[in-house]
Image (cartoon, rainbow, N blue to C red; front, side, top):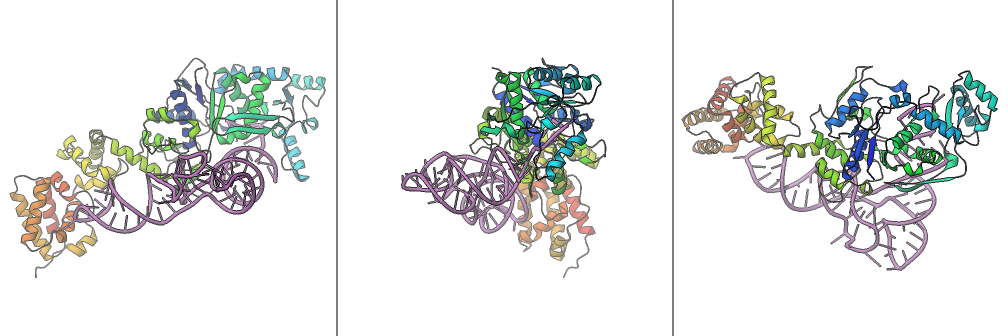
Length: 517
RNA sequence: GGCCCGUUCGUCUAGGGGUCUAGGACAUCUCCCUUUCACGGAGGAAACACGGGUUCGAUUCCCGUACGGGCUACCA
């Protein structure tokens, strides 16, 4: 048997990180078994269709390197992969009619208002759980309660109607979930689900079953929100006489808010300041922009690694996994059953780990254009040599590549302001005198490396009866404008003699004068 | 309300009858390194929801309660 899994999102908006995780697990499982991963677009709800969402889904999966073997925009032997197109081919209608002729489905003519009224009425009499089922369908307008003639007439006159699944009462429905084991439901609690809507489109329930059958899907991996309707899906396979074609199901635990109650939603990201979506998304209707991991500077591999660990772990202490390693290690048995609260801090940590693993040359290559753009410089400071040295000084102090500039801009441009606290505490006559002498000493140096600069600095301080610690913070501040930052003499060596002397002289001349005692 | 699924440090989780003085990671705290900050190193604080069973023994199995989550549409 060839393992075939699918990811089947609805194009109703951007794919959120929970969806990406579902796709990831389906992908990992398929790849581990040398099988195929399919992308199917479930666009059966015309009211909720959002332009651009489909493209977004494809781009997001591609960014994450979760590449479908078949699917919308990827082609394949089971085309088409868009349900609206499959509907046009009559696939769903065909299966629905099979269910009708075998007595497992029926036409129903109830109007929305009539259904609402039935619910309201039940509620008024203290019954909260009204559903369309074997107990109530006799009182509704359908092929089981109406005469055959009446039904024929209504259909002939194009009266709006749906097709419902006829669920047999008093049965146990058990299936084995890959994560939860055996799960049992009572058929009395399953309603007569609509299979084909009044607009002729299939509902999710029918459509996914038909497509999974036709696409030879062996394992259906989806979110836990589908668990309550799973018995209806099993019944459809059973009534179709196709139980042997039924995939194994895995219902994934949900991603929960970092704080408070409930599942992770778009609003949490806005409120707590982290992305909920892999890619930035601009709502076409409102023009509202939601941030994305990619645009925030996260590495795709780090994002995927973090996502994989939200609800799954390999049982060892290893946490950094490449996609290939995930493919090798992933199992549904090790997926945790409870919902996982998302922690943005850990997401940052994963990114930091991946940043450390990047090689300096690649980082420098990407850093140079940014420097040129930000500072409009093209001298030695924008060379590969210089960038790589700067990266060396900065690498272990940042979480994201974007921080190289934020935290190291003074390696490329002289400071325009100075830290007031350092001035107040360290700027005095002896310090000014020391700096003037330091300029002379540095001027005479023939080698200007970190070690030489450091030892001559210390020697000069000692000769003048100053503890190096008293002037070091000032020196740093003069060079960078800041009280803290990269290794001081590493910075001195990188800046070079000329720039260091310029910056000292500038400071000595512009800082408020301090009279010598 | 009903149904289903869950419940180990603040968070993600390991462990599934005795090896548990409950392990790791993130976050947090202390110390070391560093005359800065970070990195790194060492250490600390921090959890088996509760109540009944079963058992010689329960964090682990069963039942109940509590709590959390999901579903309860002609949405997926």
